[in-house]
Amino acid sequence: MEVITRTERLTLRRFDLADAEAMHALNGDPEVTRYVGDPPFESLDAARDFVTGYLRDVALPEGDLSRWAVVENETGDVLGFCGLRRQADGTVDLGYRLLRRTWGRGYATEAARATLEVGFGRFGLSVITAHADVENLASLRVMETVGMTFRAYAEHDGRRVAFYEISRG
Image 1 (cartoon, helix red, strand yellow):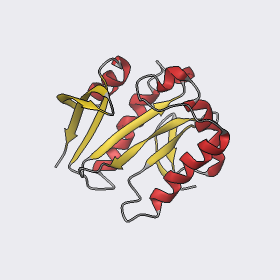
Image 2 (cartoon, rainbow, N blue to C red):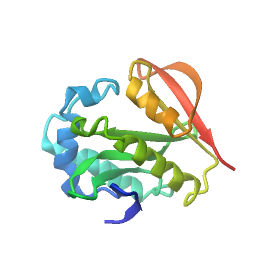
Image 3 (spheres, helix red, strand yellow):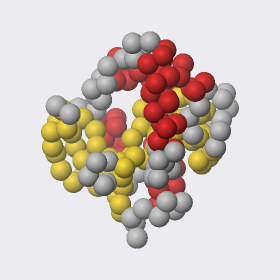
Image 4 (tube, rainbow, N blue to C red):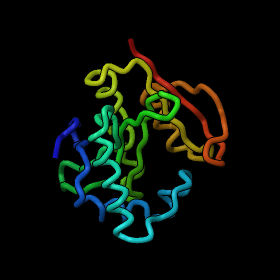
């Protein structure tokens, strides 16, 4: 599996089909999906389809921009995902989701910061956006902590969200 980047505590790498169990557990927690609008996976096969989708993304012309598995270096456990994805409007979006047991330990901030460095460095991006439900205060705090700037509120997938961005160049 290709490693995208490493931090002191985390490795961000391409997904592997073996990650389906971890993704099933991640999306099976209603607190994890509370603000994202995604239903829990109905089965392990549905989680495999999710992972297969990210593996398929890698084969696309812009496949390097994808969500990546977030792995704890000390244990080797898959904690969730973080990464970049090009949206329909052409913007590149930072997204992350981690197991509840990791919350409050700075992993989301660490993974997001590393992902931004990859986006600006390896991929030469000049602007990266992110959005979160306005009630997801922890996620909004991550965006602000990594240096993103609030841009606007909007409706997105039936939810009121705050849009942020960061630029380099």
